[in-house]
Image 1 (cartoon, rainbow, N blue to C red):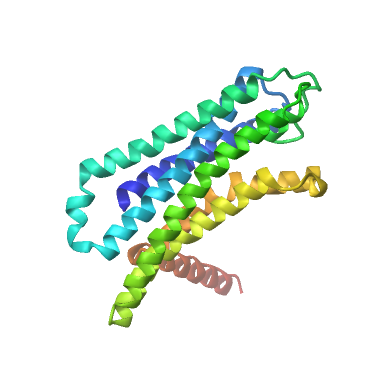
Image 2 (spheres, one colour):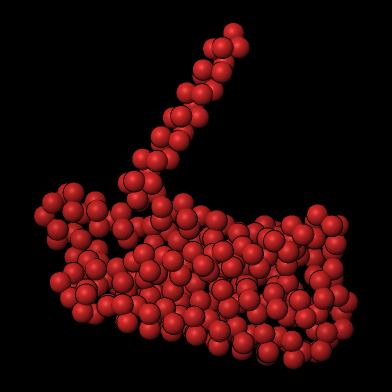
Length: 262
């Protein structure tokens, strides 16, 4: 599990770096432009990180399934080599998916201006700048994306159906609590990531507006990678204990400072 969490942390770090750091630099130097190659690179990296993270979340559901439903076979089915191969498959899937989307998007001629009305390059915004009929191209991308998302989602759901059936058969309440504390953070991350990304790319044009598009883009590009460390770390008892000690220490210092001031 911690090996996959390491990969997830690297993806979240890249996620934030691809969008936030560039936006912060633009705000700091009051720059509102990005080069054509820079936009291509940003879309490629963003698509790559999104697809890889979703593939990795699918792999992690299988990891939880083996750990809970077949614990005695865990070392055999998910040894070090198997984990490396599964993580490599997730990264390779993200790379191929991103390459397909980037090449398909930027092969269209762009002639409707160069203003994106967004703080990072986004495929739907690029398609709106195309002067050709991008409907068929966009429909093809949606079908491919929808198929991959649906297959992964079905796999995750089936894995967790088996997991919950096994957990409910655990006789001790403590054992059930431990199993649920392992699985529910992963489900929360999957739901947050998938729901925000789907709404951002498939929302009807009738409810589209610059402010709403900006808010939704922030939700799927910033919130999941920002919340992932909190969701997964809060199930670690040592980390929660250290956090409570830190908060208690800060609180006591503020009280002592207030008392000395009075």
